[in-house]
Image 1: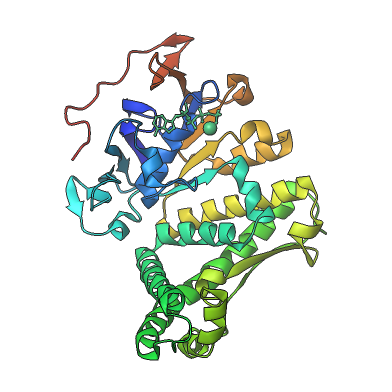
Image 2: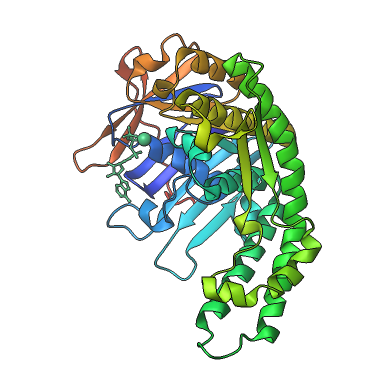
Length: 387
Ligand SMILES: Nc1ncnc2c1ncn2[C@@H]1O[C@H](COP(=O)(O)OP(=O)(O)OP(=O)(O)O)[C@@H](O)[C@H]1O
Ligand SMILES: [Mg+2]
């Protein structure tokens, strides 16, 4: 899959920007705070309907504006095109609207699969170092892009979970929990878990093997066995409703639901020891990169077409061995790379280079450069919010 055009309107610090990227390597360089990551974030929005940072939609709307939009034209392997755009209006009742081929799509799930991306960033180290939420998000964003049914099940699960938690919290002290209201939510959670858990299990088994291989290849040490094991919340999703029913009082004390797919984790270990506790800095980096490379292969295989790769600030973070390894793995996939120093990517052939800078009012300006000279900006479409 190739992004043929990327458009932004009142998105972060971009008033209006249009890019026609190269089908191979695209390099964005510019000072800190100029708007490089914002461009990658816009691509991520078009793939998953949300930011890759933990940012709220509201933060992405240009200061002083009430609506932001971003969109891409994607060309698929069979030559067909998808035109995808997202309009964010955090102050309105319909906060997020998705358009596919210029028609409003009823659900965010409809977005999945049109644009697929994998982002590499220094925050990937959190995959190893932080708590389970980071790893769940990694797993969910990966599987959702290949399977919109998974995404829909996650949404249904989340809604039922929120409702159950509200009952736990809002039932006055001294009153019995309303079993007749809680049971239907627990049943909905179990129903969604019956879709989610087998998919997590199958995808993570594949991913674990691939990640172990990548780890061995990057580290060059056969003996350092890296394992990524998905640990389900219960042996069988069919038991979940009963398990939840049995722990209502316990959850009430906790103030939240303590069991379910929203608490699952991927356990990372090296030679049988938990990585978070034992791994060195370099081993953490290798593991994070191995997981991301495995994710990239999974998405390429699942769709029969490589995803777009977004490399945010990672080049300067990687030593030569990992950098070479990453560039080799990228192969022919379309790639967007950001860096503050163009020399980080010396030696890369066949690429398009963009200079990212700030205008007088702090607005982002992105211009292609060739031989050190700036090319004229791409024409902005007439209807800048493409809707
Ligand atoms: N909602 C918004 N409205 C206007 N400007 C914004 C908004 N959100 C972020 N910005 C601006 O965007 C800029 C940050 O952009 P971005 O994170 O893309 O920078 P960057 O080029 O990736 O920097 P670094 O090299 O430090 O990673 C900052 O100048 C910030 O003030
Ligand atoms: Mg950045």
